Amino acid sequence: MDNKLKEVKKSLPFERTVVFVKPDGIQRGLVGDVISRFEKKGLKLIGLKMMTVSDALVRDHYSHHVDKPFFKSLSKFITSSPIVVMVWEGVEAVEAVRIICGSTSSRKADAGTIRGDLGMGFTSNVVHASDSVENVEKEIKRFFKDDELFDYDKTEYLHIYYPEI
Image (cartoon, rainbow, N blue to C red; front, side, top):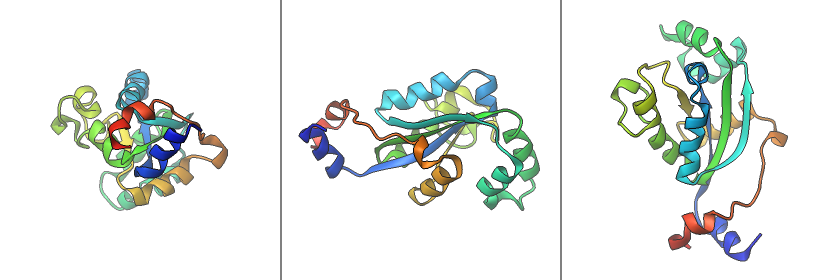
């Protein structure tokens, strides 16, 4: 790795975050649009796969919602179609991705965000994004094996973060 690139990686708060394109995004053919937004931001894609979500995985991932009245419909929705799960990396990636995704309620999300531009629902809001650095590692382990994540140099970092070096 180039010495300047090593300096960038050491000096800035790089994080990982999980995003998935939900069934409505899959059915509407929005995967490319979603990926494009994160790539344009300068985030690095380090994991990507399509999968069907089991009932057990839904209960684990949404354990904080299991006792809520909407859980049954959420579970039915998230298992209705495959999802595309991704891990992205970048400086303060969790917050950056949440800003790009917009408010959970798509009807209230700002224009220019994924949910604001592409969604109208609350459950069917196109994407899921990790809500905290603490939850990222749990979500990564839930959806990915170690050999499904890739570490590689992204030389564009020298241009994206240049003034911060």
